[in-house]
View 1 (spheres, helix red, strand yellow):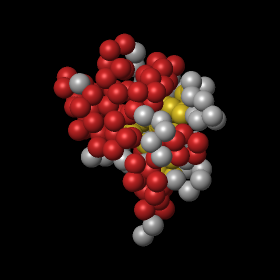
View 2 (cartoon, one colour; view 1 turned 135 degrees about the vertical axis):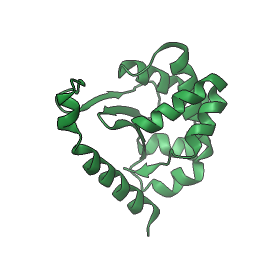
View 3 (cartoon, rainbow, N blue to C red; view 1 turned 90 degrees about the vertical axis):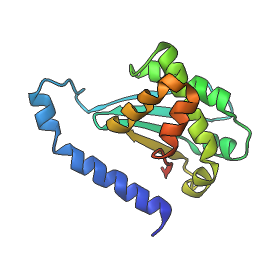
View 4 (tube, one colour; view 1 turned 30 degrees about the horizontal axis):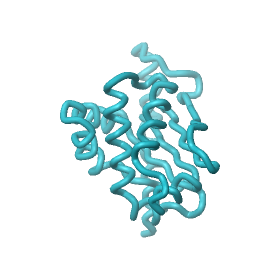
Length: 164
């Protein structure tokens, strides 16, 4: 099975499977915005590079356009600028701020850096996205006490790029 196709199918299955819980979540008083998403988009990069963070009711989706994906794969864009944008976007989406956001941002940027081969394979000229469910997000938060390396260790196991 094609790596990208398989992961895209898994994401679609996850979304469909989790959709059945929306009415119960609303009944329990858990606030969900009308469309279930909050999207941010950063213009902090140059050369048309862009990262978007979308907050869904099922989790968070980090989306990198083709220009940014290519810059990372070619070693032009390092983890520092990516971490900075992730921290800014997490705050803009109302997900995290402060020191915890800084550690999470650095850890996720490190995960992106160690997944270069997967980024290259998943990118088909449209960029990639990295979906993270809320239970997976909790695992990342648990790694915060060990710094960015703790987040890297937690995230490397389940954060995988999927083609856009």
